[in-house]
Image (cartoon, rainbow, N blue to C red):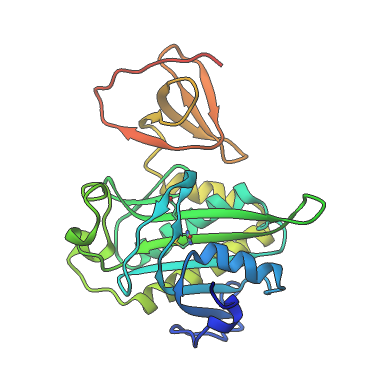
Length: 277
Ligand SMILES: O=C(O)CCCC[C@@H]1SC[C@@H]2NC(=O)N[C@@H]21
């Protein structure tokens, strides 16, 4: 049985106490987390303030999308969660796309060409360098109390360290570029970027986030396959709807809204299965 999260926190390794920052004024650090998302939800229920960031040196039960686990490597990847209490950041679908925009910006500002795959994977080439999982915590009445946005960013993992099933589909900043990156500096860049984009959302609404997402994505215009839909669904990704759904046009010209789930980018030629609305 673990001690309560509060008792396991240690001094942060990146610049904490930055009042200028919207996200990460308070950075909490834990040597070993099961899941930073799970722990920050626990801290949020205990009253952690809006914008609190939790970073783990090591994460042993990282949660991925769709009940999957998330692989990380001590000192070679960032496992980070941040807490959004205030509207409109507390909206799960907005937070999901905002996180993609913020992390895409942080990675490209580090000089690494990257792209967003719908809804919020960050790719270098065709390989995933960063995954994002936004989770909502509910009040007793069932309303959203706060949202926790977690991201796992592969900073310095070398190709051979990835488990066999991830080799060929995952990469890290260092593996993709041959350069050296410092986790603390990368975290700083990410928190600066989150701070900027949360402020944009609060001041100007969601439209600038959606526009930045559209500029940063490699999904639009591509043929994609929805892997976990009940009916086989494939087609061309033609737009991002205002609510963050992906608009998919199938071979028959019918448009489908994909609100959640996983897609894969297909390389042509593909056999396009069609499905009606
Ligand atoms: O499947 C995905 O692409 C999402 C992966 C999200 C992983 C991060 S690592 C930090 C945070 N804590 C977790 O348990 N998951 C997220």
